[in-house]
Image 1 (cartoon, rainbow, N blue to C red):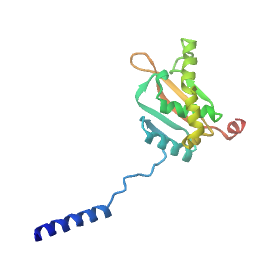
Image 2 (cartoon, one colour):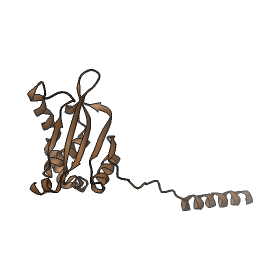
Image 3 (cartoon, helix red, strand yellow):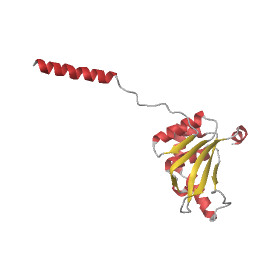
Length: 167
């Protein structure tokens, strides 16, 4: 019986010590002008903090290049929010190409980036997208090794005070 009391006392002691030394695993988000897109909620938080805290351009790079028509929904919401807040969305052709070979493809790209009532509803109801105010978006296109058009990066550019007032 004495052995059981010692084991019970040891178990209770470990539990008390374990509870009192909990580790805080949440980290403070530091703003950055260069983010890598990952389709998780943490990306939204990192982008929101960076847009709020930094005056310059915030670049979004991709681990895996995507077609402009296959832009992840999470990023589409941010781009749509630029448009909804009075900003401009620019699509830049791959280096060395003056215009799209297919004029309807550029229309398709722009409409897929900024379209959607769902994105508008998210912009109106989710405070995280308010950090996009005063910014324009630039979608820079390139070509992959197969010659297909892909998104090289997305930039959220702080508008000059003069441009922001016009909107």
